[in-house]
Image 1 (cartoon, rainbow, N blue to C red):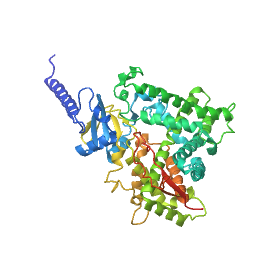
Image 2 (spheres, rainbow, N blue to C red):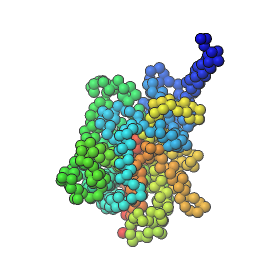
Image 3 (spheres, one colour):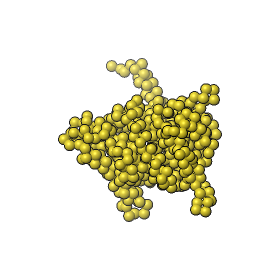
Image 4 (tube, rainbow, N blue to C red):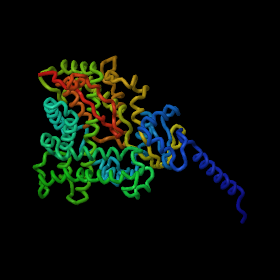
Length: 503
């Protein structure tokens, strides 16, 4: 029986249509970006200078808030605006929520951390446990500990102001140890656990930065022995692994051995661990699961707070008029007979504005968020985004975008207060905290970090006057504006003058 002509024509039409669709799809242009060299692509751009400067130059050169870069054959998408990040990482979070599979994450034993874990069932389970335990509607779970740690910090700063940065680390570290593991805040000031967290966090941050280690872009380098030139990452991974093991097991095992006997947790102060142990089935998998979530919180719970408060002290030195205005608000609302507490937060809009402007400015002085991974091919503004592209948020460009923040390099808390009614601009406040992440990968402890920083800033300004330090000859020491190249980019060190403003 002869094949019908109509059926042949239909098959031919469908085939031609399929070929055209596939051809157009592959021909759809990638986002603009620099020309790449064979084999290494654009790798040379990322090893010569801080990469957020390079990303921003491309943003300006190509006049595009989305830029494509080829790194040793891998596709990288740089997002340079809050609008692009919101559209892709939040509205399309279903395909933009995985993580970049960096080699050092595994070499340094970070694979248990849901912060760096690929999107999937294990990540969802850890994230769910975290969000259930730290509900923003239950501030009593953390505010009392943050308040106690802040009061201890004030006493220590008054006694030894030259140790400011160590006091900040102690305050942040003791707070998270108390919230997660139930330690007494006063008992773990500058303890072995806070030291381990500081060392481990540095490894965590360094391993998370795109371009820091060539092995992340050239995976076969993992087989190169540590003594080989250029293979220093092997020794670094071994060094950080030691601290990762201490962070994962140390505080959990100590508190469990001290307080828990035959499932009796009555002696353990209410905290993340005690609540989890009370619900666990007792199997090893449950305990390791709890350990992993707790250690992720412990690891990431100090760095944002410390880095932001360092930026706060620097801003108060450079903009004394903002410090004076904040102290006038505190004197007017609270007076000088007591210290602020969380019940005062809604009555101190300028302190809230200082907190958010500090968060924004800290990101101007630093760089990018953790990379995402797109799990499916996508299209944005006519540009093709290939599957498995690594997606980077250029926070440095976002926080200095004049479309959102006028005169971005000026520290100006008043930008968050509406002139018409004196109320806070909630939309602008949200943009200023974009450094906590986007979509399903937003930091689950964001509300705790903001409250800890708020009470610290309000308390410091209630008690102290911050100014430039002076040396032994009475000469003013200009603060350093140099910052290290890390995810949070803590300053390389600057001294400040601390003087008690009230008796």
